[in-house]
Image (cartoon, rainbow, N blue to C red):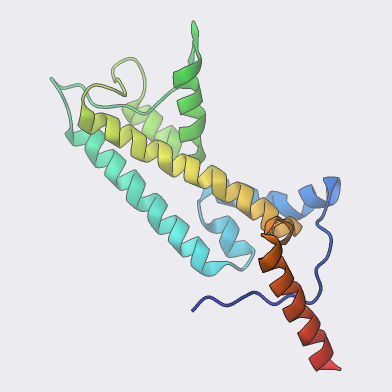
Length: 176
């Protein structure tokens, strides 16, 4: 089912400005809608899987925060605490912001002073599902950057890299 990718020739990865020019569109699209960045670079299966997992985690988080009410108080997503500054909720908010524009909807519905991320265990799980969806999208953005700039191949273990290099050499020799 999964085959070793065959590339024409291992090339050096893009650097600095060339890397940014190659990767900014897929990264922006993936932040706006998880999976869209993979779709643009031609990784359609990864795009579908990421989008489905993202939707599943957001739905589970929504249901647990909404229906896990205690005395009429809903669970909440992490929002930044800036006055006075608290680093742990702010770090959680940065992780959760990886879900893209849906973070604004979750923060409007489940954020603010009227909600607490840790009211009971069900609500805490809901906030955690949403945060994990955001962290997953941040990690996928790093992967998309590596794939669009050609760095993914240079991060492979030596034996896998050698197998890809040898397969590329055989393809070049077979084309002659």
